[in-house]
Length: 101
Image (cartoon, rainbow, N blue to C red):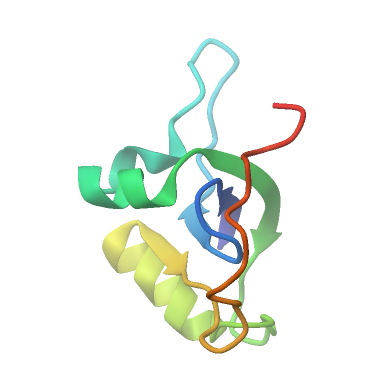
């Protein structure tokens, strides 16, 4: 299974995994956030493409179980990777936004 990974503009270490959509040249690009609820879209912010990745049972992911990710994509259309607890400084200054955007 091939997926595309997007990072959140609103929260560090939050990523969205969605199935890679094969589109022909005459089709408009699809919105990766279209499958999310309005509340989740608002919480995720702008999606910035990170990479395409092939997922398979033997694949090791840094912060998620690949079987869980694949199952979530197949059943829900996406997998949302939240920031790891304890690694985010709650007293950190909020980012000003994407620099250069």
